[in-house]
Length: 106
Image (tube, rainbow, N blue to C red; front, side, top):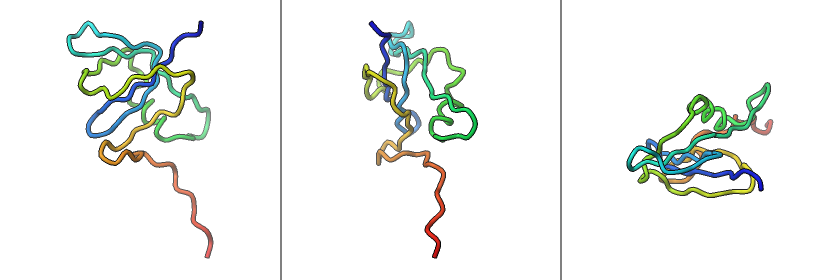
C-alpha cells in the first residue's frame, strides 16, 4: 500500500491556501490539527509556478504546521499531488498570477 497524500485547504489572512502533506492528525495543542511532511514541486532553473515558489518560501523550512481547527476548510486524501494554490477567500481567484505574456503585436 502506498503512503497517503493529503490536500489541506485552510484560511490564512483572508486567503485560501491549498497545500499537500504526507501526514495530518490531531495536534497535542488543544484546538489545532497537525500537518507535516509538506510537499512542494522542485523546479531547477527557471521558476515555472510563482505560487509554488511563494508557498515554498513561506513554508519550506516548516517541520510541523499547527492549524486552528476553525481555519481548516477541507482535508482530502488524494491519489497524486496537484498544483498548490493561494486564492482570494471572497472571489476564489488565484492571488499569485503567472508571469504576463506579451500581447499580440499591432
